[in-house]
Image (cartoon, rainbow, N blue to C red; front, side, top):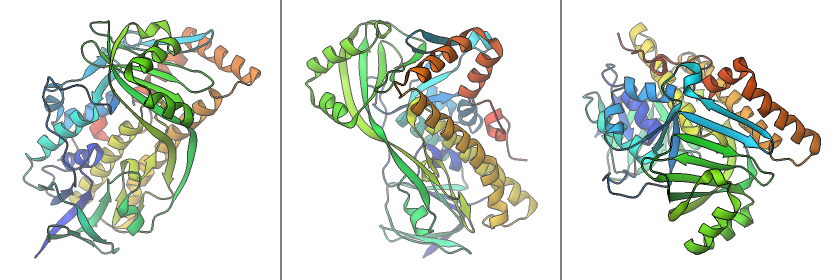
Length: 405
């Protein structure tokens, strides 16, 4: 027995689930396939290692699709200040400078995914297949079929790849990527601090790589330490007491008093961009389309914007009686997102290269640049809007507007 859908989304992570919610009540029949459900949440659990800095635009998407209450009923940390510095160059961004209540939220990835999956279950036109692995994916321009390992088979006019950087859908559809590895790894630590609560996220640049602080709710925080692969491996293998001493010695006084390391992990840094986001009958979103340097925490944000933009295009196509999987229809989505994503990726590459050099003229340039940004109001406000995801062409959901009707 084969079940027929208009849209089949492979991957029910944050981005795939967001697309499913964005298509809720749209009149389209949607399937979301996810092989690994997130563990359930309890307030007394330690914070997860994997967290994201959710921009105002991304928060608008989650709110507009109706999943925000599921997020804030678990836990998140709003931040109102953001500081960036190196040597004598220093700039602090404050939400009050642009008459905004806050700049964004630090949220565990699992919390975002759970909130979206809870909301997904409330739509009668969306069916979640979870947990189940895909056995085979048979891509055809006129419609694709997916065989699941439990024996069920589903097919749809449009196949959406939301299955991560090593996307199986992208490979089956024969869509290439350009990619390279950065010469850095990231050590990620969840820690307890001496502060009751913080509302600032900061990043300090060093020649070996940035150090970042992300506040979590209560006396908790996430630290990211970028360094060479060998040094990250060495640090990760240290006993917690020794690692705590190294963190206190290497991080600036702004870190405050770290009382305990709760958990630790590491990952290599890779840059990857699909040569095309779409072809007849298939579309790529999130990490399947792009993997970005995590320097400013924008990977999840641009993935959620992908989901919102694709949903907007598909809802409009259904309303106008156009073919959902037609190359011409899907190119509207690619035009909305590719240029903006490439700009964000290039900006992060520029930061990586400019702040990763010890060349004296470039050091002077970047210190002057940070100093000027602190004192030139228009430039500072523009940078804040950029970080909040409020620049460029935004999907309607990111502006807090419904796409149905």
